[in-house]
Image 1: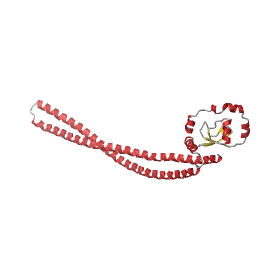
Image 2: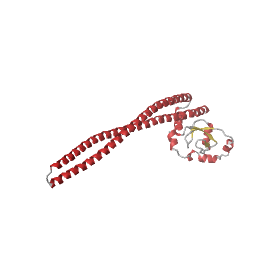
Image 3: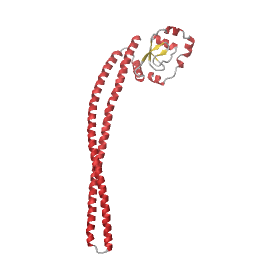
Image 4: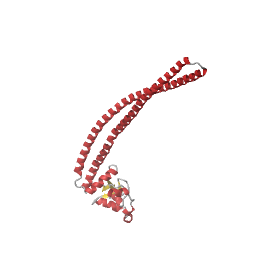
Length: 269
């Protein structure tokens, strides 16, 4: 068993590093995805602005046409002033000229506003085009960086898996499966020593009989609190402590008083 424990301790470091690298691999594409998302949002915004620009061009054409009509109407009415002969005709024509002038002024004001808006949109589109060029270059650079990093990380994973394969012979498959799950769930620490009556993974006190079974080391023991694989490790003065433990208390406590752990059941089921 000692040889297996030694292998598990070595395997622990390999698996912890491997799982850490695998998590890094998950993170690598995220920066690129963010930049691609920003670029796509920018492209959508650019299309919308371009549509507004096209609509503004049509609005300007329509306003210029209406303005020409209003100017022609006013000029026509002004020419008619020379032909009127009565006060009533004069008043009616004067109103027409006034209304045409007001309409002309309103259209001219709207046209100026539209032309200003058109110029602003043009500037925004030019700036947007420059920004998209920068974003596209960033996406291109990030994509190359991602590919290089993934290649580098895959080389690390391959090297770690090679070490893993060299260590696993002699370890029972069921133990190996549980051990890998423990490593993933316990921050890379899957096997810990027992010092006296205390698990060095979670620092919980264990019953004497259970600790004695760990000490004998005939089979695998998992901490009922933190789920980690346990092995015995001698520490100075521990023999005296163990001899002071009352046998009656040991028998009474047993494993029945352990805290239930759904996580432990899940790991070892």
